[in-house]
Length: 378
Image (cartoon, rainbow, N blue to C red; front, side, top):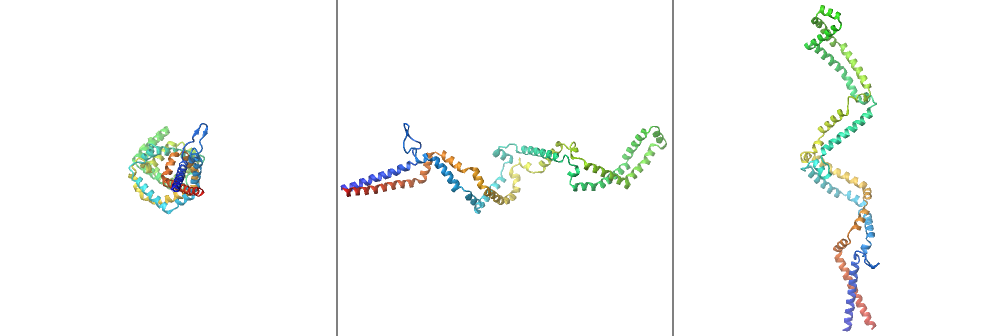
């Protein structure tokens, strides 16, 4: 009976020691959270293993994440996976359709999500500034060039082709004008002025011929002159000379007639009036966007493919720029040890209990062996 009690006592003591030792070892992984001092001396094994080595643990976790978990190869493989692209395309199509039927305007979206107010006024002012800058640059570039160097050759040829047409129009309109009563009256006034300027001679001609008779004689001659082919050829020649002089002029000689205030507002008004984007800014998206839905949706698969390739080609550079190792290290270092302990225990609580029970089992077996050895020696 004494032998049995001895074995039971040795087994119980061994089991208690083994279980308590393992339980204490598990707790010492996390606790105490901070070092404990007695006077100037720190109590051994404080703080716990993980709090004490948290800096090294954070560094190693950071390296592990970058080296083995979030690797460029792994992300590239995911981005090139057909299933992933299909899911991304479906998600993008759903989001785009939702946005295209939204009640808000682009101005509201810009204000709510980008902090940009009065988007249309901003767009118009940006357009005006851009046009002013471009017009200034263009004037500087063309300043020392002749008009013939600036105008396209095709335009010059078309203008030269129109010179005879202009001459025909001048002679025709001139003849029609002088044939009219108004033209005859104007011609009479011109003759009067001419004769008055000639003094006595003019008075004598007016007295002998009479004003009305003189107009009747001059009018047919002027009309005949205008209808003559020679007059038309003369006007063509004169127009050609003036056009040649005009082409030879430097562009800066025209700038006094074409100012920034003349060009920029006109071009801006044309853009704002004819480009629908400006009107879209303050209209509900659902009023104009659905018309482009089919076109946009058709572009989404290609856009996803291009975006995925863009990311894939630059993933290594992006990962370096993100400094994921430092991010993980910083997060681990700032993570509360108590929270980390709670997290680990919530995942591995059952396994830790089994370790405790295993320690008790091994301690009990060792106690039985020790009891047998004691009995044998005694």
